[in-house]
Length: 392
Image (cartoon, rainbow, N blue to C red; front, side):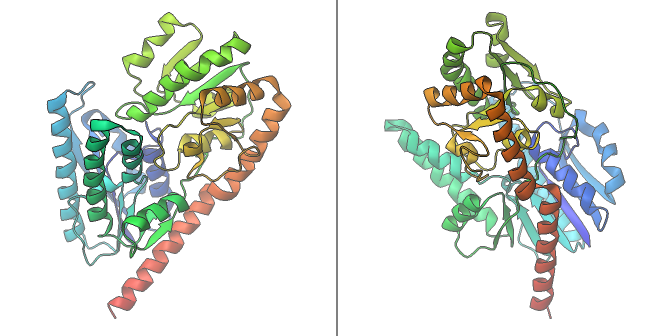
């Protein structure tokens, strides 16, 4: 097949966020059987990275924008127009490219893409209405009214986009049900995010009493809030019992709110971008994911489980994963319980290793890359058969 991928972010093997890493792996594997074309939006400084994609792509259509370290309000407006411009650019490629299939990554990418005769798949990554609804329900007074208006706008925006595609891929049964509650007549298929793409068979010694949180922070305020919540609300409770506990905040683009902490608190390390994620996970005693607002599958949790590191997260963190609490990982939704779960892993290495082993097995069964690729190929085959029947 001749397939066009339309990606809002540059697919990269060493991506700053899990979505870009996933799309790279998808293109790499599908290129073994199909002719892949790619339209992608990228920063000026990322242009050299296109060379790593060329072995897997027949043709690449880049749409660049200026690299800016810190964005002001005017820059944010420019970013919105850049999204719109890229979406319009991609629509022209879909119209003129004579592709057998088009797959669009991320809901926001598709705002200007029109419904075409070409079979088109939307890979939603996240259901963008869901966290907005939860934030609205958690608000009060004028903030709640403002949140409700935002919720109505985002819901309309997302519904307008997803109705143009068949099928829509979601990451979990929960997200599938949520999308169908907004648009019941859609064809929605669950394609889980593959876990452990960067996890190897290496074994490494644990760093005693080290607690890891790993995420992308640039443009992802939710991840900054999660790190601050753990540091301010949970970590002090842990240190009362384990004074030498260390909190490692890892990942791309941490703001000054995070990078300023180690100068005042030597028990905290902020690493920035990490090249070897495999080592990062395996050296940690515990991985924490204090997710306060759910929005889809939290890929970093899956990767931590795939690495054999015990995980403590919230109900929102496990929402799209469906692991068994108490067996595959531990769940805690308040600071005291969260601290207690972390301390249980730190105090009992045998229990931590047993839980981590169950978590690793769970991920391999349900989120292994071969499992995911088989589901994608079957979805493509079904879509093309349906397309041929409708045009017969």
